[in-house]
Length: 117
Length: 114
Image (cartoon, rainbow over all chains, first blue to last red; front, side, top):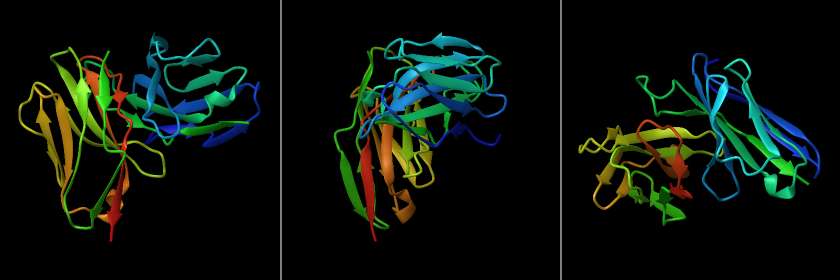
């Protein structure tokens, strides 16, 4: 697609439930990032994919958070046993990947706002 | 660890005037990138301008320019001829060379006064 697409735009869930957030990157972008933006804060890095593999997952806060990118395109961020503190906007971004002309320029999606009641 | 600090939570400027947003950062790297992103209410982060640390010349993009002071680890954004559409949150961000992971500041909310 022309841009990075994220679904759902908004998600309201109850504490303890499981949620999935989807990111569809720009076609041809091999690098994909997930960030979490809490209210009044800047985005914080969660995980980075280069192709199908997670190259850096050092930002995932705990083992309730998991992300996949099985075919090197669409990625899903999965949150188990949601807690109220998980409420935030989850942003996805993609790029051509390090080492390629135009690297280090991320294109962001509009994010998924997660509210845990 | 790298840190990015934006000390101005809010700024306002009269339409058509000039405003400068401040950003400082801390890193032990010699090569890196610095960015300014704009986030309107739509939530999508939009790249405004980027600076490569090994380039001494300050980057410019139309009405947007930066003042990059490498020794002082300062990276301010100047917006000239401010327009109503410039109203948004502005985030300063850093990434080391060869690694696209961004570290963001806490943002500055810019209001344009008609």
